[in-house]
Image 1 (cartoon, rainbow, N blue to C red):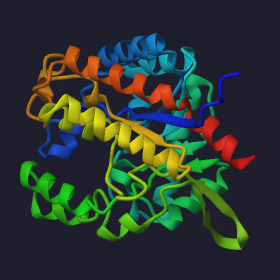
Image 2: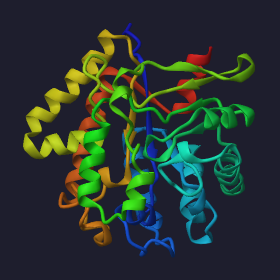
Image 3: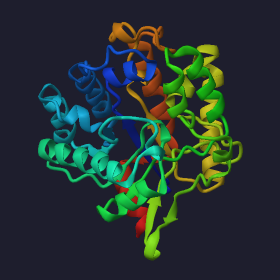
Length: 312
């Protein structure tokens, strides 16, 4: 009898065209341009080919617009879990009041429920932003898990590069000053754990997994970067990360973004973003290669199912 593989969860932050434009700076995002009608059918077909059902963290503003309804409903209809990714997709939730956080969570939840029939039970903050008030709001509204923590020390370096390449005002840089986290986040737990809340309550945290020993990321954005240097190095890096997880008994939570799967040939408006010079077909090929390596060692499930197993 074959030995049962350990589980791992897979999620995709469904950041839309407007949110990437907003991140980069400028005003051309304010009419909320979308590529969901192009991207969603494309990625769902790939996931079907790989036999995967994953978690899509979706932004409430997208769910509030009729033009995105068909694409969002398609995700649920094809059997995937719907997660909450805030309403305005702003990476400074730590500056929000509890009332503002309630709007971000509940308004998103309302629109997603209307479209998909799913009550969201998982949340990820944009830009890995979070606060204890956020966790209180999630618990009060019966969320089963949060997934906003990236336990790595490289956040300040990623933020510095972002500030160098984005067209941001000094005021915009100030409110983004904790984007991607702080150096001390490299000391946070890699395994799932519980936040201690008020009145003895607890909320499950499933961090985005980094190397257990070195706390450096290995989600797909990083693998694509390494693959551009050397495909063999990328395979070694990823296999070493998975081996580290197995040794440390970490069940990985692996993160995807739309730009991991599409290039500037599909979304010309974002051709200026790092990595968008890689053609879509090559990114698709690399994604399938990575996932098949992953599937040899782990059973890949949605984050909701992962949370249920942890909470047993």
